[in-house]
Length: 396
Ligand SMILES: [Zn+2]
Image 1 (cartoon, rainbow, N blue to C red):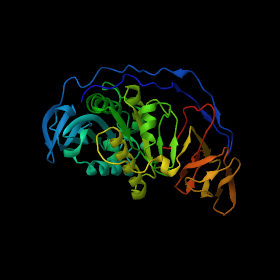
Image 2: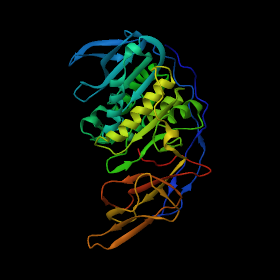
Image 3: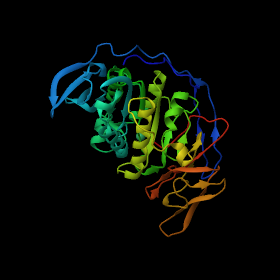
Image 4: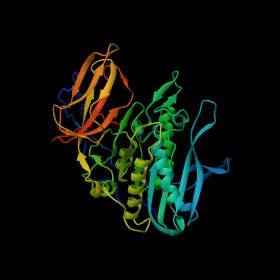
């Protein structure tokens, strides 16, 4: 199937905001600045050059530098490497591409993971979905790209090591849609992937993440619930929370949205290790999404309705005001009241050096999992609702 169903989604403008916190439980000060102009008309229509095979084969997998899934044989799975940006040595970073091309035509879904290199449950959720697909029974196509920030994945760290001025660590989820001619390799890599692999093959897209090293999160989706196509997908996950917020403009799922491709971002627990129970919830939800789009047949599994999903539009950060060992008094998904004490911190004498309370009523959506903290680190995020949400710090 070709073409995108819509150019530019009907969506609210991104609002930039900043968060000021003083000490532990200060009020959340959101200053909404000018609405950022969102380029809805992004470059060009679908694949212009079709699939380009470089002629290379790596460990039995053919290498492509551009892909149009319409070119692939229907009714089977295809395993390819996509040729990303060059390393300083002149070799390339390759990313793993799995395409389940249905026997019958239909919508095209794109699943991505590994935009942050330490988020292993995101990769495992995507490969588990792909392993469950039988292309002979499918109407449409699902493409998975599991190790987007390849050098970050190699060292299981959040950021891409860019060697421009000595090693800089680049957050790959702040550079989309990338630029093939940028001064930084990570942005070039993003541009190559977005222009030649991801956007041309997507009618909808899901970018899987987890919490980050040292900070774990509950199972939730980041999704703009005022966009009907996005809301319909996000509600199909049997997970307890939805963060209804535009977040940062240059995250991958927002680059898809700006290109007219409905997209959202599942968050699957802690970084660096697998959470099988949580992964299973996101696999079930993603299979529901594929059924929703008619790609996979069969009855819906459990959805957000079955778990009484809590939708909040803001994340209240509690930042450490001291150094010391953190003791949490609440757990992920706990409901908290404004003023409720949620964590304390002790020094090396065992003395309590700081106490932290929530400034809002909501649900715990993220917690520092590293026991030590220095001042300024986020200790807890509380998912809550306020009348005018902004673009906020959030756990991903
Ligand atoms: Zn992430």
